Picture 1 (cartoon, rainbow, N blue to C red):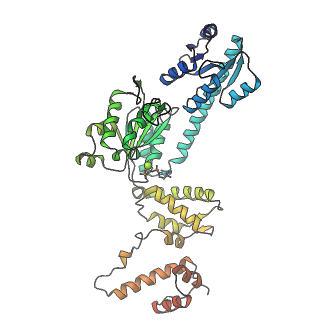
Picture 2 (cartoon, rainbow, N blue to C red):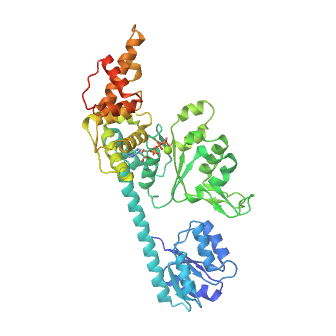
Picture 3 (cartoon, rainbow, N blue to C red):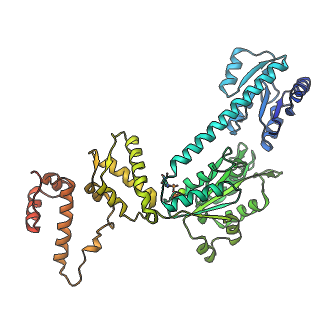
Length: 456
Ligand SMILES: Nc1ncnc2c1ncn2[C@@H]1O[C@H](COP(=O)(O)OP(=O)(O)OP(=O)(O)O)[C@@H](O)[C@H]1O
Ligand SMILES: [Mg+2]
């Protein structure tokens, strides 16, 4: 492993010299800064493994610098140093995220010990985050169908490389989930996964969003801000809805992908970024290219490894597993006791085409949980909630060369029959569901030849 690089910030030259020497002897690489401003400048270009920070500094002082680090999302461990610290200052520093507090004159043993401990803790936290992410990944991308197993294999393979991945799939198939799985399976899992919805970036803000800006770059830019590329550096940038990107944004994106460097708006220097791009769309990019709406050169950059997520109707075998998973989840979220789905209800769920894919199944199960007070979700419950157009559709009541009255009667007979079944034959409840007087429902039942099976 390369030597850890430490940034030492102090306005006293002799402290910089002694601390650098002490750390150098222990094998650390050291950078020094005479003020917080200089240190922040360095931090904007480079990452450090730890920061040693004096409390009293001209300009931005140590405590203000801690807040600034927090605001910029820099989570490098910080050890504070002070000549005449009060307990209050030390506590305030800890509150603002400092790891440790050392009094001057600085003993090199104490310094090295504190630094080692701090680096160790941060490494453990990093491992912990990674383990949790891997666990989430394993738990969340469900499905045992051959199509899903193949997809999982492809994710592992793609994760192992640095190549751009283009995820293709209909709405609700799990594109975002797959993107985070690729990130989690990659050597960049430790870095950031940044999401950018390409369809939702206002035209005027594209550059600032992608590349960030310097303070004062334009009206309203009061502070320096890192853009998506900079934040995703060392990690993954997920470009969602890539098929809906404006031509302007396509041009800008293509340039960064080609050059691997960015310029914050209002900056005079360029910054190298090391970003792995994963893009997703539910559109056919080929069709978009043919229509002149998508750049073929950008397509080539994004489409190094295409990953197609099959629609849920093409892997119906996954429905029971997903349904059980969403059932347990919904019961927990809505604070309902555990429920079960009968085999008949499950068969019905397996028979539906799910134009909205996994998200639609999730919503459907959630609705079933909310609307079914019983512990058991039956076929009748499921049938009542499945959207019209599934199973026997309105269309299937059509009979060629048949009077309308007969077709409507057949539909009514079926619908009333199902509504009764849903209420276990309870006529009063069914009548209320259907918005009919109880006597009117009885009359209809008689006329349609529906026999009363339940109570009342
Ligand atoms: N294989 C899966 N296992 C478990 N949950 C899944 C799976 N696929 C999708 N989901 C869940 O379905 C929902 C939709 O997934 P996601 O948002 O990733 O889809 P998407 O393809 O990005 O949708 P859209 O095109 O609408 O943006 C989420 O709640 C997600 O957790
Ligand atoms: Mg999505």
